[in-house]
Image 1 (cartoon, rainbow, N blue to C red):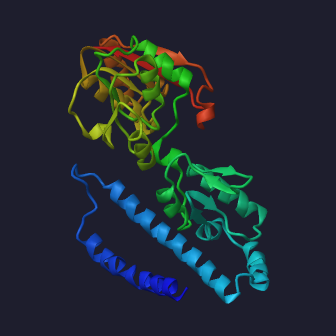
Image 2: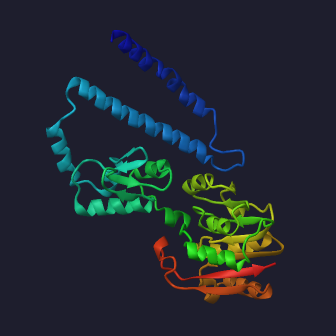
Image 3: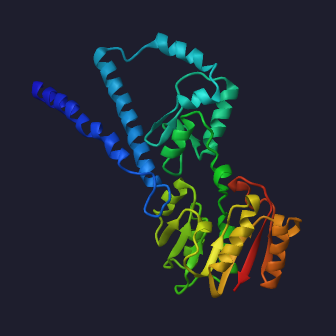
Length: 330
């Protein structure tokens, strides 16, 4: 028994040797990757390590409390429970923990308004409440980054920040049909890939084709890297002009006329004889802004086609906005 304890003591002392050098190792690096973009893989690795260390510290504290016989403190817990009723949404989120990628609320009583607002903020960040044995919020991606934002008492609305509204499967399959289907010889681009809804539609048409894509949201990029026959080229499609494609299929962001900017850039990346299909808002069709007028004239000159999409098609994706599809052959 004493030998085991001695080994444990040596392990506890030895574990600091690497940890002590970590700040210096991190300071030697910079925040950018080889392409000049923010190295999100590096940042997420640091955040994951910090979170794991915090989890380990909590578990060791519980083990120590058990050894000392002080793991149950009902008076303190009761006092904290009462204090929780006064907490704002920011205070609730600052007391949340992340355990095995599950966001756990603090074990206190909240007032109804703050709890409802906290739940809304977590859902905006991609979380979904799971009851039963889980009793926490789960995420369809690695939640380290969004948790680090929420845990500072800050909002992390992914749809608002990244204009991410996933394309329903039936609309995605329809867009693939509009470009004439996908074949082995096609070169395919998805300029704002999200979590791969359009890519999956492409692969339903032709499983073997390689799809190149871009995506801004770090959590979505991580998801895309796990998909077969997908090459993630970078974050921002609008900042790259290399490569040409026979098929381009997209659901770009709408705000600030980004959708029509994307369509024009997609056209530049099309091969001669290539075809693109993109979902847009209807704003450009009637707006009096010069950019929209120029886009209407340009679309007519190149014989682009416009197809209406029924209202409410994106309701399950979190928006009731009307949409349409533009199809252009070069």
